[in-house]
Length: 195
Image 1 (cartoon, rainbow, N blue to C red):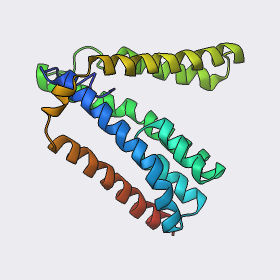
Image 2 (cartoon, rainbow, N blue to C red):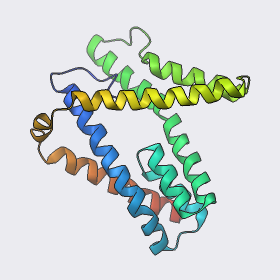
Image 3 (cartoon, one colour):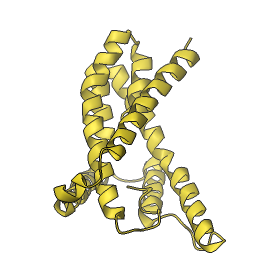
Image 4 (spheres, rainbow, N blue to C red):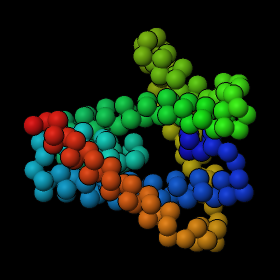
């Protein structure tokens, strides 16, 4: 969703974003169930299991679920790995935004990051300083959860199953192959680096 905010808009942008959210959530839920089994079958230790789960599952909630299903250590490592991936969205969104701004206008123009990305960075910075009272922090965490639920519900309300069926099988195939590629990449890279 962060990247879709900086991509050029078209008549199918909203439909494509909704489809991507649905597909990624479905694959993350499937991975949350299947990847701990893969971890067990492959005999990965807790550290590598956490790196694998955090490095491959798309959604944070499913990463946490899969990680702690393996062990507390795997859960901690999976969560940290996933949060590192989330933090990398900021430079990725910035680079993509700059590329499209330069391509459209011949120069970068105004600051290309969407407001919510800047807000995310500010919240991470303030939270890292540990200056926010616990009560306010707990309220903000609860509020952010409700905001996320509201945003996803709004996407659901705007979703037309008829429109989703017009997309075809190719985007779902692409997202599935990408998911499998990431899993293979992390397994191979992790096996290489941890030996």
